[in-house]
Image (cartoon, rainbow, N blue to C red; front, side, top):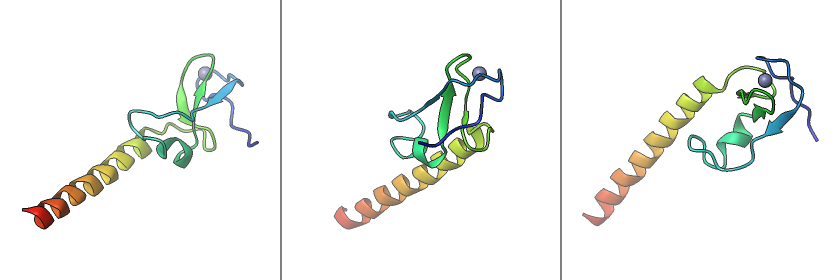
Length: 80
Ligand SMILES: [Zn+2]
């Protein structure tokens, strides 16, 4: 089991790894960004770097949107 940095906001050491589906990253985003939540203040961050995952989440969503739009465009070409 890997260990994560203590909460950068409150210094809390009880860190919960986010394994469930999230609105922003689906089932892969959490693992990809080592997304963890502080049990004390509920601050969400990258458990390895100790930084917020906000920028990563935005980039991830842009990439996912492009892929989804690309697939829609492809289906549109194939069936219409
Ligand atoms: Zn905290």
